[in-house]
Length: 116
Image (tube, rainbow, N blue to C red; front, side, top):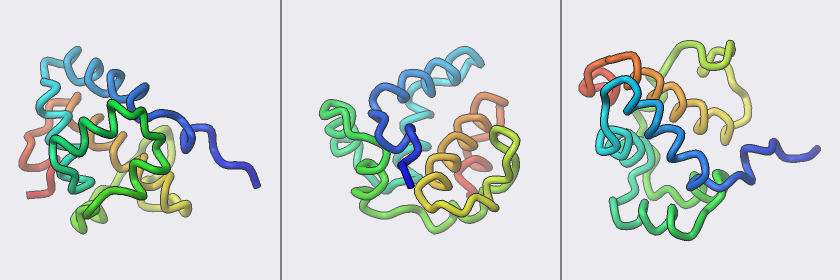
């Protein structure tokens, strides 16, 4: 079975799209970064290192130091699919991130987005 194309896509190539989506709705790059760091456990420096080295999604999530256990509380539809029903673990992690960025763009409070 071949890997999904997104798995081998550079995280750095998609990151500006996350930021642009948030900024179009009046949110900030810092808030997008906060979501990513919350989800993955990366420090800001380690995260920026992954952006600079153009790490692919598969490696980015594989090297995440501490995936947040509260991410299991992320529920709902993304691209017409229930996030909690996605079987492939890597695709689920990617969709968790997509869902969090969507919630940010929809104006949800950071405390709710970060399941606080």
